[in-house]
Amino acid sequence: MEERLEADGARGFFHKPLVWFGERTAPTTPRTRTDAFPSAKVLEDGMAAIIDAAPLVDGYTADVSVSFACGENATVSRGKVVLAELRMAIPKWVSGGRTARLVCQEVERHVVSAGFASCQKSYLFDALAHRVYRFPPSPLTRCPLLGMSAASILRLFGQAFRAKLPGDAAGWPFWNDSSVADLRPGPGLWSVEPHFARGGVGVKQEELLVIDGRGAWWLADGPGDL
Image 1 (spheres, rainbow, N blue to C red):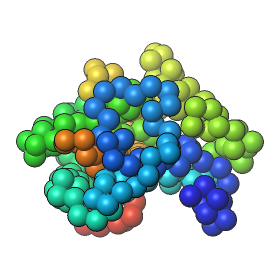
Image 2: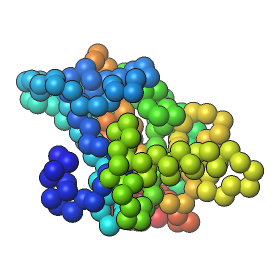
Image 3: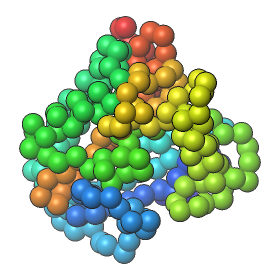
Image 4: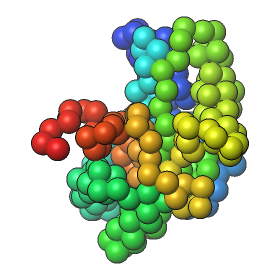
């Protein structure tokens, strides 16, 4: 994946490509440093899979992921229906004025009512979403640290630190269920990645959400009727 993305114009990565098969798609507890990294596990018939890639093209980040199954898998099929429901709901919740914390709570209620368990606790800062930035050309975008580029770590962690200082206007760069996220998501580009599981089968969809003075919409769709 990395070689193909670079051949198609990627000049670095927000994070290295990730590939999970089977039960590795369904983390329900905090992962260790290497749990998210690709393994030697082989995809088998009926097995769930998640692919997550975040190439940088002209400095812009495209952090996206998809779920699928190799053959028939009823849990993956049901999970993709729930993902489609969340895809419709999340821009409406954000445009309607909900805080990032409330959106996270709404997502968890929705997936639990559908019979799944949230996997967000396995993510950095328990994040349902994170800010996406443009990175100027730099060797740091090609320097991996713990699976992320050094540029990504410096920008994201740096903003998380700044957000706790008085007078910072850029805001907390994550959506989670903490009090620090009890603010409306700020204008800009956000990578939103609901991920949930049942019976060792996980599903996830990640794409870019635009937020501005008109509301929120998926970048893939455009602003639509707001």
